[in-house]
Length: 620
Image 1: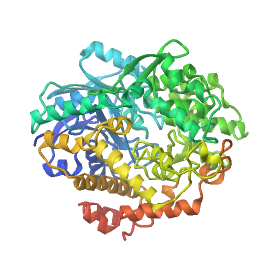
Image 2: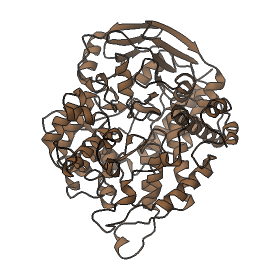
Image 3: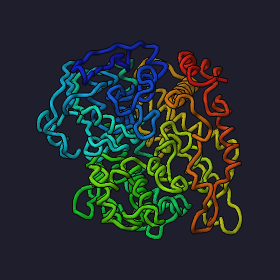
């Protein structure tokens, strides 16, 4: 094969064994890599297990774009059965580990079992060692990476967990390079459950590609096009932080646990404020439009910010000073906690305290209380910290009326887009393959931009609550690109989304790398295959106890309205949302429960899924 190694490194921590497995060109071409390869491995090998047991497997998977000069191709997928949701869980992380993994001669690492004492994995080409990490256990992720680079040199890729992963916080993530995080659904906790502190990789091999000259030519064209785009300069200044301004203007900024869509101190945490504070930028490997904007926080230390962590740890907690939000963000990165779920969990606590449902804890705007709770969560060092470490879904089950203000889907906390008046974005959250995450269908910008003005009040903000079938179609279209193509390659979607790099570069680059010609129909079929397989995984792991209610957004968006602004009182309408969901299912070839039909599975070359699903439910 060209472009793929066709090799998976297998590590058994229980028995201290390592081996290399080869996989077929057919699997490579059907599932491409990254998320595709990870989902196939989990479907085949992780069935009905406790996510925090030795039987769960951690998959670290690269795609054909990785380790090569492709536009923002420095991503890596980390996946496992999720301890937060109980279903399929993954995340992508920008890291030098993806470059070194591919140059070491592997497309993926699969780690199973559990070490008796803390260990880390060291991979240098064909030399693989399981080494003691007893001196690293308990360190934060920044210090862990620093110490490992002292041992193995700076020219390595490192993935590690902090106290959050060690203490099995349900939304612990895997970290790299002091600010790069991946695995929102608790993939860091899976790593911690295996007593695996870090993975260090050094690769020196040349990745086999089909057409080096064409790859070089296309890559240069794409990089040059990115720099020439008219939006590049503004992107370079603010990155994703520009979203604070337009979400606030369009009643979509998470505020006070998503009770409202605009924040009175939004100007103090937005991209313009960031510009005045920024001291440097960081990016992933092979990226010429870095999104990591680094500021000095309120304690004088560096913190890498983007929109999601500022929205969830800022306005959503009622904290309107960016340097203080940056402290919370830095602590989350050091402890190895997902900033989105952390912000959602603390906001739930704050609202529960204000409602008198919890006896003690911080309230909205309490920066010191929030900061203390971050540490208590990471170390599970207090009753409240231990409670909040379980995530919003589990907290809501123990608080009277908690589900009415629990902002999650399938157990994963909602990211930074408040969707009282945005049915398409609500649908995107509800049908995301890992729970309420925006990365697979960031449809809200389209929904705002294409909504015609209605009435006098709407002249300032384009707005229209519509539930037309085109909204379901748009969600699927974006899922095919963002949750499918980019996650399988695996590459960052930002050059396409943010500055408008032509999407047609991607199949051309894929052909130059692999020699395989993929039409857009082929790529969309691969994305649909991936979505159907992941949905089948959820249904199997829930033992067939599945219904369309699993694909509903948070209850708050139906039963409450926006608290302020021109759309005060507006909210989603359940009957209309339900019809939109049916349209989505119909377009996907899934039944009214949200389960792929037999015909769809066969069409997508997923015949092997049918017998297993039929053990837990009737297929239509």
